[in-house]
Length: 106
Image 1 (tube, rainbow, N blue to C red):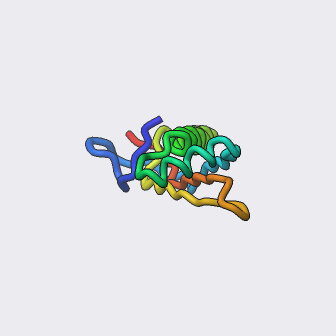
Image 2: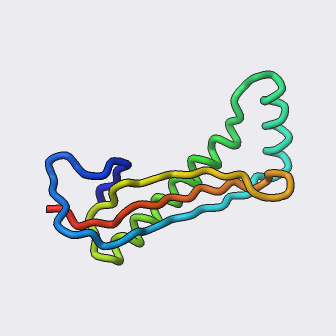
Image 3: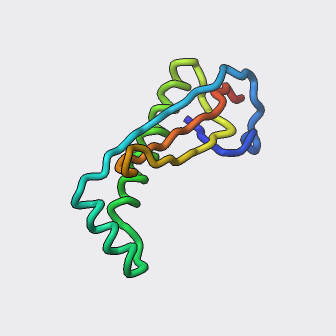
């Protein structure tokens, strides 16, 4: 499955548009990760725990969009948009949502 943020794929022509497809992943960050992230933020460092969770959530969301596109008969997804949100009363949940257009390319 070819996946790209661009509206087309260089060297390929879109033979058929099959529809919009999406993928979402919501990940919880536990109290220990929150505590260490807070400490790192205070000293100006990066939060490896949150970065790891974001990568994991993005991977899951992209996998979902690929699976949904395949069910539609697509061999590519173009125009992918990736959005990140913090959810929950205290921002304890991370959400990654991915959307794009399933296409068949020749």
